[in-house]
Length: 218
Ligand SMILES: Nc1ncnc2c1ncn2[C@@H]1O[C@H](COP(=O)(O)OP(=O)(O)O)[C@@H](O)[C@H]1O
Ligand SMILES: [Mg+2]
Image 1 (cartoon, helix red, strand yellow):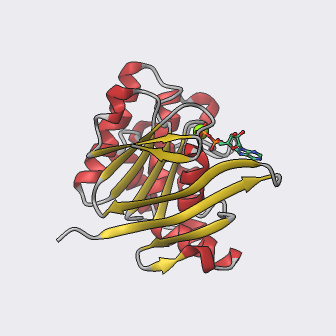
Image 2 (cartoon, helix red, strand yellow):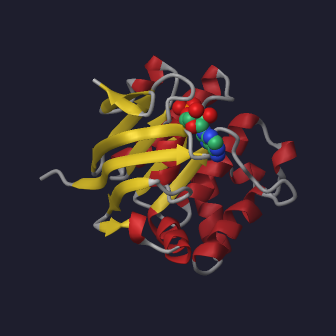
Image 3 (cartoon, protein in one colour):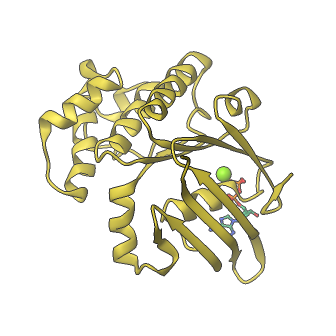
């Protein structure tokens, strides 16, 4: 039986008491599905993903994830909830520039629970980077940096992966590599929400949700 792992109910997000980034939006996400979010620039895609990813909070409305109403959590509980449930993949990677690939992944372990170098090496192997463990981001290609970002997202074994235009800065070959990796992660049972501008990428998912002016367009 399919289960809604994420339930967004009537959320609005108002910035600076004027910009309505999300407008009374509701959305349910089925566990194990890949949902692609598309829509013009400024339509609220990143805002929605950041709220589901516990990086930002809604002005009104509720978000339930895995049965927890995250909109009621205090900052500290929200951070803990994120570390245990959600992996984040960004267009700009957001790696720490002075740490190696291995150290970037181990830092995520450190904030989650305990550091285990073998596990960190394993997850970097998994994304095809066993030969790049001790390279810093400046010495990695864009595709390699994105794969470190995926390894960092995976290290704490989240069941939800959120990706904001993960292939936006990659050439086609590296973009495909990253997408097939994300597909594998879905086939293992993870729930994926991925923002993209590219209709070809949108088709990787089970479902496309289109946003316009902070609302779902049907
Ligand atoms: N931190 C912020 N402060 C003020 N306005 C913001 C902020 N973040 C986003 N916005 C505004 O909210 C709207 C939606 O932005 P965003 O969610 O980034 O859209 P998208 O990812 O679809 O391009 C835009 O009008 C944007 O300018
Ligand atoms: Mg965006």
